[in-house]
Length: 120
Image (cartoon, rainbow, N blue to C red):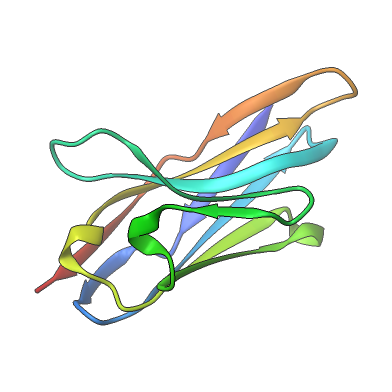
């Protein structure tokens, strides 16, 4: 089994910054990709950014230039630095990971979500 634990959400004024963390634990052979999704009230969950094992990243257009994903491979942890936050960034942020648990099995894991609220 694989567990993802997120932290770092909260309330911030527009223009402010927050940093989210997501730590993976459990039966981890290697990590294929990790990333962040978000879900605003009344909307579908959408991709924010992900990073693959080789280091390539893919950002949603709405966060390019403001959000930065980074990782600590030794800790199986990814971080999301969010700057210049806007009210439309408000939502529950979910960590997602595709993890090899052995040579042949990939697990798609989700965190419990952390709420980010940006006030205008």
